[in-house]
Length: 374
Image (cartoon, rainbow, N blue to C red; front, side, top):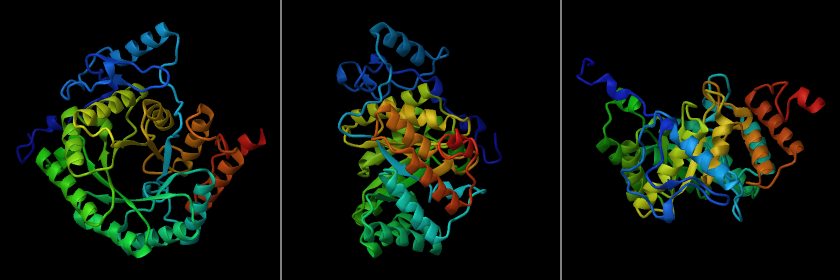
């Protein structure tokens, strides 16, 4: 026991890489995503069991091979998956990156638009005067230049943070979605002394503040890939009650493997279905600690998320985030988005390199000197 009587064993993470599907859940078929048998949501308490053999992957592969078809198709039909650029928020949190001069930020905004980025995170206005002013500057540039970029901004699940995002929206006349985040994993709850009631109250507070300002909000579940089903269920229920338009599943420590991505996305769909909230869309936000950031993001797309996050050159905390230009290039090749010419992606990398004072690696698959030479 700790000095205050808390049990350190309660901080042990859940492992979605070993989660089995709910009883009756069938692997996806070409043109679909994981769904319960017959299209009906399975009981909310049925998911998240541990499997010593990693049964999800083996079962799905056997079924796919028996059908002679693909396991997880990337075809999106009439609606491509959206890409959210986190470079100017999560990307510049890394200790090795810089907060770019404003001129470079504006240049990077235009580069984002040129490669088909759908949504940009303006930053976290509540963290200080410069961050607030820069968020206003970027929002005004997007509006004045008519850039085809949706706007989001980050906040903790605190009314004061959400109100700062609302002030940016009010000053610039730009519609902004609040991305309100809270830690969902056992280790964070152990360290902070949080319980389910605190989490539910925090989500409700953020949702009420966003609604009062007339702004849509997304609940961001930090470290969702190491969070147990019951805790995620509590957060999802609170988000639905608070009027969330989206849920973001985060692989904050770059922990998850593709089968874990698939299991977590399937669980989130089941839970939303059980709550009658099938209209809430899912985001995927991943990091690259195990070198799996790109693979996990592609798997999330194939599993059916509507929006996936990434940063230019993969910059970010520790070993970085999912690399945006590689994500966009691969999604184009797989038919999940319109292809983008590599020259534009290379120009985007160059703009990011200037803005972030971050060198492009010689072996970068798109923008590296060795790749472009060969």
